[in-house]
Length: 428
Image 1 (tube, rainbow, N blue to C red):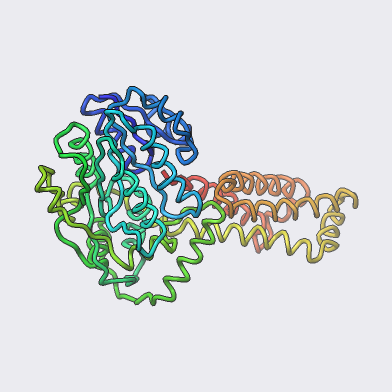
Image 2 (image 1 turned 45 degrees about the vertical axis):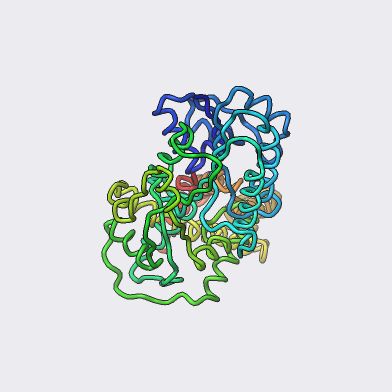
């Protein structure tokens, strides 16, 4: 068959692409970013588009010879963009597929409801209703928390919580949580695509039993190979709200943190489903959590990711504070900085340009690293500017290398930290 996968480079979409290819099907990936598409799978055909803005006629043209469409796109939080992805896309897509033999397999989420506490679940429910009203073949799959080798979103949040140092942060400890292995999800998608499961149905995909959130986190810590915590500390609800508020603020700068309020609300209310209908209709039962963890790789990379995931925002905020502070300190008393340069033999006009130009660059880099789009470039700029400062300082004041306080020596780690942060900025 020829299958189009919307969100083809996402956590679930990329796994669906791999499973479909392994089964011998021709796959077309659909997504917005060429860079992410080529990184996910450069060997398949890609239709690059903003799916929330794609017109009905465009869908009809692109999907005219497609047998199955799998919608694995989704967005946790995002205002108008959230509605565009979950509702507008399905409105146009279902109209484009009306009257065709194409089978639409829509990957929704367990717990969706028009009256849900989050816009994520409400818009997902609205999209599900649009599909249910359609006159072509459709299947709606509602997985619980998807666990995969790749860490993103909720799975990244769990990994980070499990790797918290020394003591266990107990947040929503009794919240029920169910999960599904990514391979069980792709097996279900493949079974639906190949006609093994009755269409025109909604299926929950999940392991049979639920677990308290704290139990899941402890199982993940043991799976990561980390020692037991030495103690616990409760995270009060107001502190969780503050974390969510801070993560939402970061979202305005382009950071899609799994600690945003939507994710925390989901974790507070729980993630659960009932696989009975799926199994009764011939679906393969999903493996329980212990078997999921037993079949996922737990390596040094896992521990590195979990720890660095917690340190990344600390590194970004620390670098921002450092560079903004250096710029402001210089501007607070520019004459002192000018005097330092003129005392080393520089002409006063050059000293003034260097003082105000350097402080301006420091401020610019300290602000730029706060924005996701410019963070990597800012990190490289910090390393480069530190090197320039070091070279110029070496030529003009080589005696500072022997200064007991080590002002030049301390520039070296200041160069390395932004390079380190730049190296771990990838989200997918």
